[in-house]
Length: 428
Ligand code: HEM
Image (cartoon, rainbow, N blue to C red; front, side):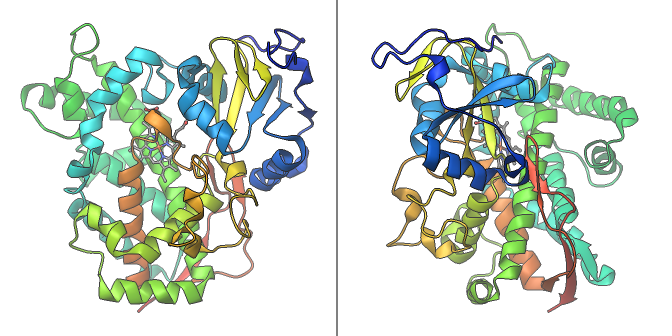
């Protein structure tokens, strides 16, 4: 990726060059809390701002119009491989869904899609509820839990069992050791387990995600290699658990901190218990809980900024973005813009209810799951598992935040509660 440090190609209509893009220094305020910092930048400097991030010049494209540009209108000229390659360091081969571009991505997304389709997700709740209840059952005896760590176990188990067909017991324990406890030495053991699952599914058709990939062929008509399938499984496990766990923990935290709203949710839960309904009915039947989850997505987007590399010369609102520029669109910024959201830093899930529906005022204002054709493939699954997690935790336990702990976000590629979120647990 070539990063243009020198004034280069200009925008033909405005005559501006790359050097005319306002430049800012990223102060400690950026590292402490990205959303407010970038939202302020948008208000003060406009939607295109460049900054140094380490050794690299990056261009922040801020606000809903910029999100639309990155996620929809200019998407074919913006590379995920260049963007996420910069964020993750050297990309491994074979590529995974997040780091593929163009036709290769379209083919692989099509192969994985059936595992995430709404009709398929309708079948998942009984397994998801079993996983959630298995974990929640131990909370009362412990008296105090870190809800972020608990959510990590649940969301990892959901991907492992529901999408990859891992069995509870030693298989799930191995998966947790590798992905939750960083047991890198057991990675080859886990790969061997996945290879066995793939071999089984090459001969016996099973319709989980591994089964879909084991039966699939690539652009040239060849079966996918074990390595390619393992790369996809790895991404589903990583992308599918950290983000969901973070959002689940923040959502529970917000609900526990706002008892008046949660009281209304509890009434809703008594009237329409979450267990036993089809996935698609959940959001419809539990609108108050659903809006609280969306408000958590707005206030704590698990992927605060997402990167792309420009593949050819582009221009956005009169600013040239030459080929090789690294750009970032920012959910964290657009979720806090006062022109879109009333009292943007306040927890107010009713903002999503009619007639306010603040998220519908401007397209691409709410992008916690990305947007456009490459919107998060796991969005529906994540929302279903999190609604079930919140509903079951709140129905079963009275929760309170343990006092005198430091609850802060840690910003990295994904954001998460840095020291976790400890809560006291009492059975209802
Ligand atoms: C609360 C939970 C989640 C959040 C907030 C989230 C967020 C996102 C975002 C923002 C993107 C787009 C990134 C970009 O534009 O560069 C994305 C893509 C993706 N997510 Fe999620 N995600 C969540 C859960 C999941 C789950 C449960 C899975 C799978 C089990 C998953 C798998 C993926 C994959 C594979 C992609 C790449 C899709 C593509 O480019 O075609 N995510 N996610």
